[in-house]
Length: 145
Image 1 (cartoon, rainbow, N blue to C red):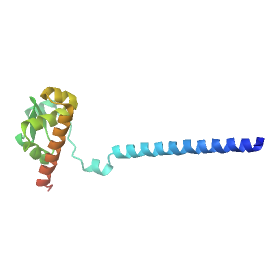
Image 2 (cartoon, rainbow, N blue to C red):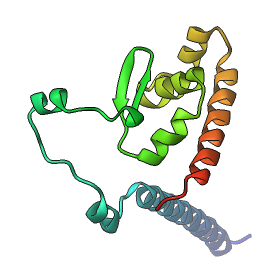
Image 3 (tube, rainbow, N blue to C red):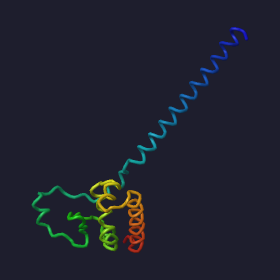
């Protein structure tokens, strides 16, 4: 192999390496954009979303709470805006509602909830999955108007 052939081989290897680096950088950039687009909220959704005016805290305390939309679990209460969700949650057992409340509203991990109930975290995951499936089925029974 002559000197020029060797230099050309090194150049081709370097070119191939550079192309690979550029291709992987492009793939990474595309994935970042896709994740960003998935997290974005459309302007149309924001325009039609229900906005609540800023009020004094005393107005909230003295306001009458609709019992159907009030989710009470573990000694805490949450007012739900979605009537369809409130109806579906009312069809779940108290224990299922508590697990959903702990996981989605109090942001406890499956391990923490499992320790509270004395079961494994994978069992809690199955219970949550089953409860969400039941919620989905209940919400299909009450279609949007």
